[in-house]
Amino acid sequence: MSIQNNLQAVKEQINNRALLVAVSKTKPNEDLMEAYNAGQRVFGENKVQELTAKHETLPKDIEWHMIGHLQSNKVKYIAPFVSLIHGVDSEKLLKTINKEGKKNDRKIPCLLQVHIAEEETKFGFSESELLTMLNDELLSTLEFVEIKGVMGMATYTDNTDQIRKEFASLKQTFDKLKKSVFASNDNFTEISMGMSGDYLLAIEEGSTMVRVGSSIFGARNYH
Ligand SMILES: *Cc1c(COP(=O)(O)O)cnc(C)c1O
Image (cartoon, rainbow, N blue to C red; front, side, top):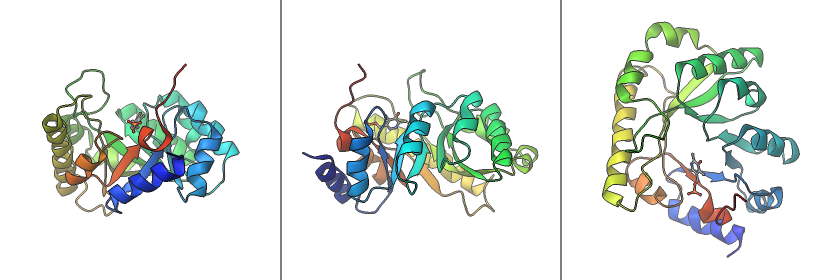
């Protein structure tokens, strides 16, 4: 199967129910261009250096999403152009993104990462941490950040019941924030959940944005 055919198959499955972020990490520019030529414009990367290098060399109408863990000291490299930062997982990072947004005179779109997996290793806030952190005082200082929703990663497991429960819990957290902290914010609309193995499940549970890599570009080789 070619990248173009894979992309077409994934899009047919999604059937316009969620935005498709094509996760192109570790893949060469030629692979991204194959997806681009088939109409894909939204790409996700998880390393700042790779993201900026690809942004510099590939067509300017690509929307670049930072989907990986982001260190505060690297925000400055992507602040001028990034379309969405998926994994905001600390107050410090929010404040840094705000500072870099101000320098670039733009509001930087972000998602708050919520810890939904059983595994300790995945980053993110708990729901109660978010409710405590997102007070009026903090929100009023974040003039150059646009908080557009939440993002989560399910446990790496074959147990679909567990994955479904974790996605449902992210949807619940989204709904709770939408009703409270973001009640008067029309931009708080996005739930980023679902990858190659579970994006249909994620859409059933309310995902608005799926991050799909290997089903489009094939398995990754890290060596
Ligand atoms: C790599 C990655 C994906 C895509 O994973 P696939 O299983 O290849 O679809 C999605 N989200 C994040 C955060 C990733 O790092």
